[in-house]
Image 1 (cartoon, rainbow, N blue to C red):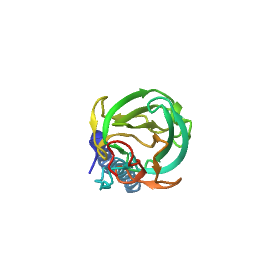
Image 2 (image 1 turned 180 degrees about the vertical axis):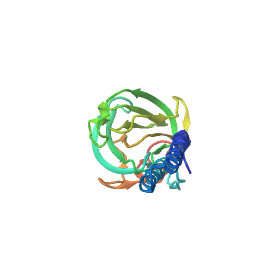
Image 3 (image 1 turned 135 degrees about the horizontal axis):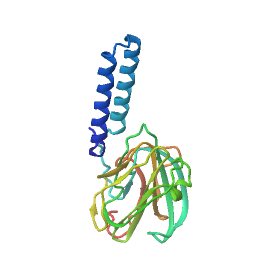
Length: 224
C-alpha cells in the first residue's frame, strides 16, 4: 500500500519515468543509450514506490506499551530534564530513519494532543544529536490522564518536508498513522524517567509495532 502522503509524488514520478522511457525508445539515440535511460527511469520509480510504502502493522495488546512512532534504528538513549511539556526528569529515545525505511509515522500512545509546535530550522544530518535542537521539526505532546509524552519529528539533510496531520485537543489512538517526514529523518521520543525502556542502542524498530518503553501500572488510567 502507498501512503496518501506520497500519492502525488508517486504519480508524478511514474509519469516522468514513462516520459523518459518513451523518449529514449523513439529518440533514435541507439539501444545502449535507450537501455540506460530505461534502467534509470525504472530505478527511480522503484525507489519512490519503496519510500512511500505503507505496510499494515500488528499492534501489541499491552496497553502499557509505548510504541515506536517510526521505523529505523535507535541511535540515542539519554536522560535529561524536559522543560517544554513534561517539566520533569525524562528519558529520550531517538530513532533514525534512513531513506530505505518506511517513513509513515504513527502515534506512540493513546491520549489527547496537549501540545503542538512547528519550528523552522537547519538541516543537519538527522543522526547528529544537535539536530534535535537546531533542525526543522515539530514538537507533539500527548497526555493520557496523569501521563505525558513528547515526541519530535526532525527533518534531516535530505528531508525538507514534515507532515503532521494533528491538532491540539484532538483524541488520538496508538498505532494510528498521522504523518511522515520525507527522505531521511529522525524522531525523538521523550518520556517520564519512570518508564521502563525496552530498547537498546542500535536496535531496529518498526512504527506502531515495536515497544520502546512501558508505563508503570501505578499511573492512573493504565491497566496493570
